Image 1 (cartoon, rainbow, N blue to C red):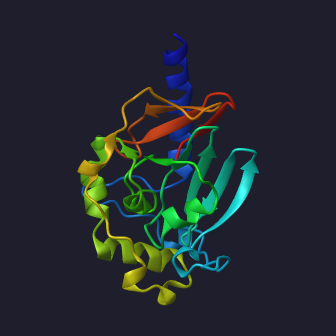
Image 2: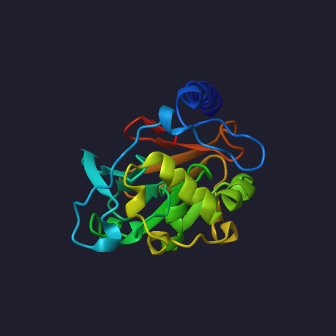
Length: 218
C-alpha cells in the first residue's frame, strides 16, 4: 500500500513538472522547446582541464552536488560512504567523467532518467550505467550528431565555441543496464529508489532519495 500511494504521488508530481519542464515527447525524434522558451546559458570556464571546462557545480548538501552543463542541463552527484551515483549525464559535451573525478574518488554509477539529448549522452564515458530500455529508440534518435548540435545551438549563446571534437561519441543503449521499476541502490548511508513513470518519455524514471525524502524527477 505504501508503494502504491507513493506511485500516485510521484505520478502527480511528474504530470505537473512535465507541463512546465522539459518539452513533451513527440513520435520519432523528440524536439525540445525553442530557444525563446529555454534558458540560454554561456559556457563556464571554471576548470583547468580543457575537457572539463564545460561544467560547473554547486553543493546542495553534505552528500549532493548539482552539476550544470552548457545548455543549463542539471546533473546530480550523490555520495554515499561506499559509492557515488550520478543522476543524468547531460548533452555529452566535454568529459563529464573527468569532471566528476574531481568531485569524488568513489566509484560512480550513472542513472539516466530518460533518453533525451540533454540527459543521456555524457554517460558514454562511464562504465556502469542504468537506463530504462523503453527509451532505447528515443536515445538512438537523439544520438544523431545533428540533433545534438542543433540542441546546443538553441541552448547556449557560446555554441560557436563548440567543436566536433568536444562531443563524446554516443554509445549503444545495449551497453546500459535496464533500470527497472522499484530498483533500490544502497550507496552506504544513502538509499536511492527508481520508479518508472512513462509519460514525458516511455522510459522516464523518478529517483527517490529515501533518507532525505527528496524526489528527483529528471
